[in-house]
Length: 335
Image (tube, rainbow, N blue to C red; front, top):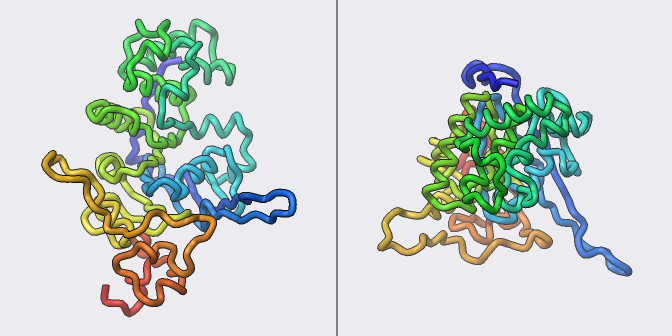
């Protein structure tokens, strides 16, 4: 069970998309009970994204923007209310749980809570092989040791427990476990936010190296545009369940078009310790998703809001470089 380097990301990117998200929405009914109708919460609303093989798509937004709900649907843990998600051209609702786990694996925010504290590192990393019936015990042991080396863990830790490891080491264990059955896609949900800054950089560098070694496709979910500037090829900005801007990462960092994307970019911390936290200039806090604003959902916080923003929802405007959903860029507007 030797680890074989896969084809290069450049070759793989020319093939069919690894992931296609078409018109995906997800609603929840909240507060329903006896003699109480309840309300509908639209957590994800008409999301359309295409992810090429070998690509890193970053998804950014505040808490409550729908990022995690979308990731759970991509993992098959939750079914869309509307639309479809396709992997290799196949609707994931028609893919068995076992086959889907071979295609896509998650890496979560807190490595400690996602690892069984009663299992050794070797048992944790080998679990996917055991679940899928891959190899003999000796072959699984050899594969685990080889994968530990690939993620920067000394094999001597194979009998250790998660509590005996640092946060960065635990996240390496989580990454090793996710890679054991050679998935095509890794969905990374805030994988570095629980780590120290220096350790964050190490994990990001590791993920970049592993992407090339295994020809991986990443969905990288975060609230930090600074991380996506380093690792992502493209960025989708989510607000109240919708993608309000999508663009190549470098383009979005240089010239964000949507006012919300511009505010997120302005929220990136400066390395100057003499400066305070940046002001987003977004007015009141995140709106109530059970009572969303009329028109453009961002207009109550938008510094560039126009009269029509309060009663007319903007349509997505697409071009070769991406998409923006904002009245500032409607046809005939000089901006």
